Length: 488
Image (cartoon, rainbow, N blue to C red):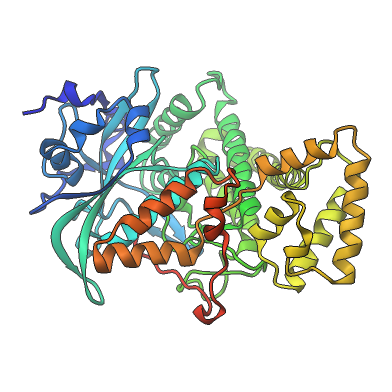
């Protein structure tokens, strides 16, 4: 029998020391025959866990939910959320938080089993998860990490040996998710609606201690918390936009206080540049379209401000004034992050007043000619403008000449500019058709080699290696519009 210390578990349960209204104690439901599908050795090492021992039978029992490691206090977290603008009570319907792994450096990470059975928040569901969506979250979350975008991560996917009935019979699976925390805007909404002011204060103090420990203990600390969350969300959403990522379900329960991307449900990456792009099958109004992500982020943060009002000032009118003043900073912050990132994507080391019109002109031409978002910047990075969908057009030729002149006006050399572009523009992203290809092979044929090769390529998106070229290829036009579905 492998002991806890041999595996490396060093679990704490600080969230369980918060008011009991925030969670329910729950044991993960055991499964009949756990089997390891994919394991993240690099992440295990980062967490100071022994990968080999976690892959053993005893280790798999933990990853599948058949056993809990010593020190774990499994819980399902309660939260609320505005889903497509409508407020509702929610909670971890098929996820169990085992505890928080504290690494030798003192960093703390939630260890959560997703697909581990019913909880008090399951709302009629079975609490289980299908293999395909769990593998999809593993692929996309690890790809986002490689793209240097804040995200929860994935340690493993384990099959359960038990089929699930959805529209068809599907293999079941459990994903082990790792996150700086699962504190959401919806967590604060839940306490603000059903808890006391003192419970709200304890939650806010906990968020500060866990994610913003440099905030001083004074009467302004909660407005400072609001400011810091705004900064992280503005930065995060700008990073999404800079790589063409569309989250797909930006409900307030899917927006973290830490500023990490979470809940990879109907997400996808944009191919042809179109600001109106929507992938989610349920987003029929385009609420969470690519172009709407920045303002939706601002809307969500307004809901966070509403939840925090009792902590901002004893007088509600003054609390609202404070919140409005800080909330107004989001738009400029987001714009600054986005503009800085776009300058880097075009190799601009300094700032000129006409940079933004230059950027907007390129995006306008890309949209007009349905140019691929990632491959356009890839082509510019490789100084191969003739390979873009805009090649041969007068307007693109004129834009390219303006851009080259702009590069020539900065002190840095052209080679320095192209190096900056190479560091800022991924050569590849998780192309939707490649992800589906990997999932089809895994789920239908139990062939995981396609996914393994994809993951290997996605682990170094800025490498620009010849081996990656196939993953930069566009889908066949016969594939038609890509659609994603909830399920993770």
